[in-house]
Image (tube, rainbow, N blue to C red; front, side, top):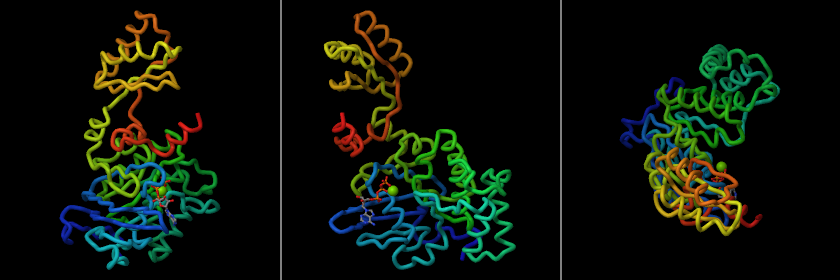
Length: 336
Ligand SMILES: Nc1ncnc2c1ncn2[C@@H]1O[C@H](COP(=O)(O)OP(=O)(O)OP(=O)(O)O)[C@@H](O)[C@H]1O
Ligand SMILES: [Mg+2]
């Protein structure tokens, strides 16, 4: 078993890709969880797998980490075939699941030592590795506290540390920051960056465009079991239209005028939502657009409830790429 992370992949036949998947198929009954999914992750990078609930992210991660068998297609991880060389793949990867796996009663140190023993490190080496990881993930001060008293961010960091016991060549992180507050998310991001600086390749699933944008050098967008875009964060944002200006007017009668005003500064046609009295559009000069629109609306006597800038969301990405909304948005639309 590779305990030193020496299980690289560059010489193993898949060039400089740590993960290479083609045409992955996975069915659960009638449901096609993956339906011809392709993915190429360059070695030494963070690659974001971005998609809404039910898109197939966890299924992809479970197949690539050999926990689930694929029904069709092929995948290589660290140069090895996930179907035919599952055991060898397992020796070279780490996995942090969507839900934290650490034990609440044990301390951080005890958790890591326990994982070390599970990976057959032997008592002394397990203790040593726990000390290294506690240091690396900035948990030394909290090492001997019960995990039940950790913050969400600390638990996630401990989870990351646990998946790093064997210094894997490829680490799968399934929604590592879902449910965390902004500060804890920032802490996890720092840990991920440190891992990659140490040579690990990371495949990170997320429902947050800003998270993929901050961490990943490449993003694959997944929808209904298929990759629908594969691009750099900047490339993706260019397609989606970058930052957006958003105006909420007080009266429906003013929507048309607001659209005209916003159109003067926007990239492309503004969109309006009559039910929410909202007009929004992509802009490149954020602050310039905001001041100009605010002034022009005032000059025109349009009463404004709210005006602001916002970063594109996953919902925006999906609307652009697929022409349809995410399920969550559909549900919200129905609920209104
Ligand atoms: N074990 C299973 N049995 C039946 N259906 C499943 C199973 N696992 C996943 N599915 C279905 O496959 C589809 C993809 O699920 P998956 O968990 O991969 O999505 P996800 O992108 O990880 O979503 P989330 O963001 O909610 O975690 C969903 O429709 C899901 O209901
Ligand atoms: Mg999932």
